[in-house]
Image (cartoon, rainbow, N blue to C red; front, side):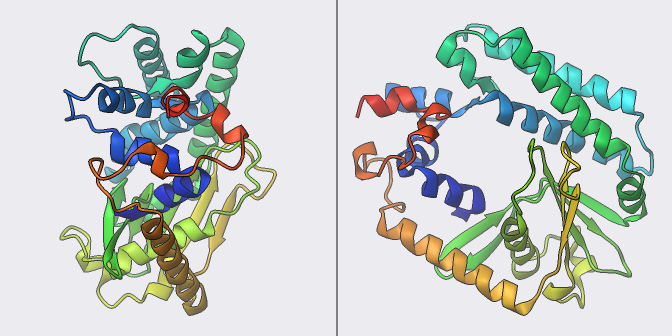
Length: 304
């Protein structure tokens, strides 16, 4: 199973990929190492944590309302975000009972034992700003309200050689009389990096994969090149806020080659081996020492 996020993680640190994708397994209750890897896999930095909260609130509290042609107020959206923020923080700071798992823990608490009030305040301000930018984007809201069908966080699959590729767009909007639009929310402070390739992977997954029953009608007669891609930077507006990308045959060919090269490199590094067939020592560690500072598996890695 290949995904763009797994590719990025494998490229950053093969061993981190092993801990998260091979060793971590919630059902493995009798292997202490796997239990610990599963627990650590839930830990996120405060920066990643705030992005997940924004995604969660848009997915759960905003899009369902837009599907019903209603627009929640900014106050309602921020209240929902505050509830998630408080719930996740309480879980992250409460000692776990045997066998208990949290949705998202905080790496800073695991590492330092606490998160400073200033850090929490900055994280909340970023969440508030991101959701405010989203809700006050009248053009985006009107476009989503005009859609005939919206699907959020749907896993899409297609074959790339002998491997299965998975893409999970933040949102896809469908119309009867125009091509679909794939949206990707980003909560990056600077927002200078283009995420076009990730969106092109999603476009391939949407059109090359087997259509789901609920949106198949909207793809009838559609060409892959008609799909529209929109990256929405929710914190910074200094780099254009939205980036839209066209889908061309040249870009698609390059994206398919990128996926094939990534799958091959992972295969050659042993990524298809099971947990019983491999160990952490089979995989390279990060070339950049800075990657270790934000890695939840640092404690496990030091043991190997």
